[in-house]
Amino acid sequence: MNNDFPRIITLLRKEQGISQKQAASDLGISQALLSHYEKGIRECGLDFIVRTADYYGVSCDYLLGKTPHRQGEKLHVPETEDSHAVPNVDRKIISNSIHIVFAILKKINSKSLTRQVTVYLSCAVYNAFRMLYSANAKNPQGLFKTGSGLSEALTSGSMHLSLAKSHALLSGEKLSDEDEPAAKDALPALNSESLSTDYPDWAPSLFALVKNTESELGKD
Image 1 (cartoon, rainbow, N blue to C red):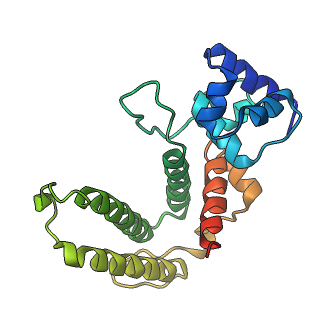
Image 2 (image 1 turned 120 degrees about the horizontal axis):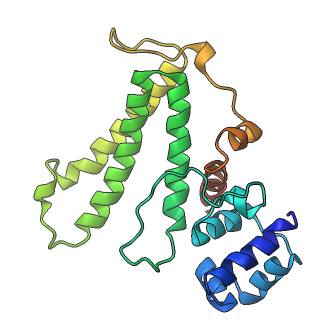
């Protein structure tokens, strides 16, 4: 970690009048560990950088001293009505990662591929929302046209089909006369360095999402 990070996170906390104890609690670590981070005694991981950037409302590049601008261009994610609430880090990680997905789709420039990825992601959000909505039996089910007994199976099938179609379009296969398969020369070369360069404000979120997801997949 560079020397700027400890100085900047200390400055931000003091500017906002937040005690070290409160900041540590909000960020999910001990006060002793935050003290070590602020003094530069210990180095933190990528997850903590992302959480801290969201907590203080600045870009990761600013935290690392790479830019004097506190706010990089970021995907707007509405906060809760309580302006003092801690930003939902997981929500921003997902939102920022989706921004990169659609930025890559824009480069590939295949409407058919974009459509299939949109269907895939929409079904995932639909399932999550419907599960939460339907957990309270008193909530009116008239919002949904698909029966509760079929919705999960249908959306799961749609996700698998959309993923299969996406793979086919990426390989250049034309599924119908209306389809626009991805051109081989339009597929961008991607790696950690290029992602960080092209999407400096969103890449840390994507890297955190990859790490967190694979950590969950590795659990028994």
